[in-house]
Length: 139
Image: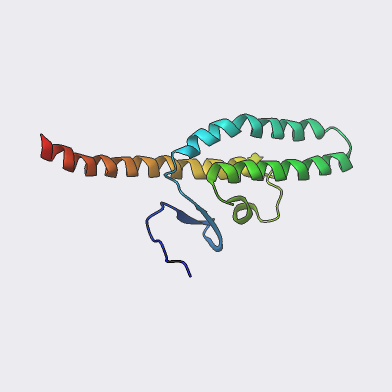
């Protein structure tokens, strides 16, 4: 059996809308999240446009495109956050479904981004304090 390696990997868990059975887990201090969001933003917009363009077509085609787009959007979001955040967030509901005037996936990103920003800010301040302890000793 392998030894257990324990260290603070920065992952945090968040209960979706307070529901402890729906836990989203990711590292909010992952510097790569913001870059991956920027990289995937165009792709997400293309997928949403593809779905909206299909709304005028027949119902069967729209259903197929909605399912296809849902899978692709979930994959993009899970890649951005480095973990499956979509399953606990959406369950079996299509992430293009609307709530509050925008798609569920946009609501999720809008909820997660402030967590990322505040976590990065907090951790950066803690890091600067730790570094200052050593650099001030040298001065």
